Amino acid sequence: MSLSASTSEHLIYIGTYTRSTGKGIYAVRLDSTTGKLSSPELVATTSNPSFISLSKDKSHLYAVSEGSTMATPFAVDLDTGKLVPDESSDSGGKAPCYLMADSTERSLVVAHYHNGVLASLPINKDGSLGPAKSIHQHTGSSVNPDRQEAAHVHSANIAPDDRFVIVCDLGLDKVFTYALDAANATLTPAATPFIATEPGAGPRHSAFSIDGQHVIVINELNSTLTCYAYDADTGALTKVDTKPTLPADFTGNSTTAEVRVHPNGKFVYGSNRGHDSIAVFAFDSTTGKLTPIDHTPTGGRNPRNFNLSPDGKWLVAANQQSDSLTVFQVDADTGKLTSSEHTASVAMPVCVVFAN
Figure: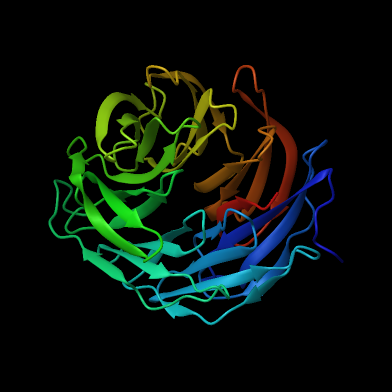
């Protein structure tokens, strides 16, 4: 059966952990009218593709192999949705957990959680990866002895204009900025190399506002969102606002995971693992202020990742511990989520990427 998506469908790739019955990267189709998901199909057999990302033109997909030191590029077959693997390359560190290509597809930046390394690799014209050109070793620790005993680089998010990379180090309680030379696949610390978070916050992932003037960071350990004003000329960050992702009356254990901005720029979403919900915020793009709106249960356990459809009508959550994908309709006027009641079963889903 063809996996290619018609004009009434969205093609979605799902990254997984392969520690149980999962085998790699799966593809599903989302009906853009009803929110119904097709049965997931395996499109690439690979070990622990816990984070995947697409090139801007959707011609290539890149996958980490967490637990190893490898990253793998795949050519995307636009007719069938199948993935054609190229040779895996050393990613420059241990336990790669996040990767992203610049918009010209000349550089791939990779975050490594285990040993606190940020690396950049050249992307060759045929889509294959060259050896790392830049390797930056973070050092230090912070206040949480269990989670912040050392540097843990958790994400590397390239700015819309490709000039800088925003790097969250959960172990150091710092958000770093690196200048990216995409043509040469090299990274250098920005003039203002980092901004410190609150002690014990544990910055995990980031998202740029639609206009590129703000960066919203989700802090894993203290379950907050922090908005920073972003200087596109220097890459410097200035703190604007911080809000909790959990209800005030919640007393259980929970950590955050993913942050996304709605395509209309008016709303920000963050996932809570433990509370098992998506926190919804209104976002003022002029001031950078966040206003809590709602908490929507994901209908599963441990929503490590989620994503919004490009048209902003749907949100798909990946519930790692319940082996499920759940679909929500998004109200573009209020930002609120309503369960579509549509689900799909995938073993340990941990990354959601829309291909169209």
